[in-house]
Length: 103
Image 1 (tube, rainbow, N blue to C red):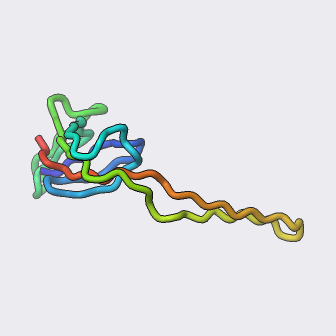
Image 2: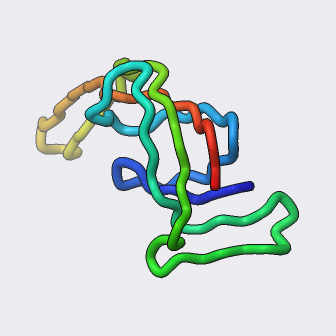
């Protein structure tokens, strides 16, 4: 089964066993949680359920593997001929999760 879920304002296409990085969730390492799916389909795409906005009775279970900081992202702003430049960097807080069950 393939599902489309929404976590942290972003949508992800997932299936059982996938490991994905999402924006930081307020969960501890090894916590188990679940969310509802926006769309569920089988591997072939022959049977598809589309939610309005979520599929009733759907559940995507996941386990938190790690809480970490991502790679540094540089943001550079410059206005030509005005002697203005600004260089800012930050490291986003991320959560690595493993999809355990799609139903």
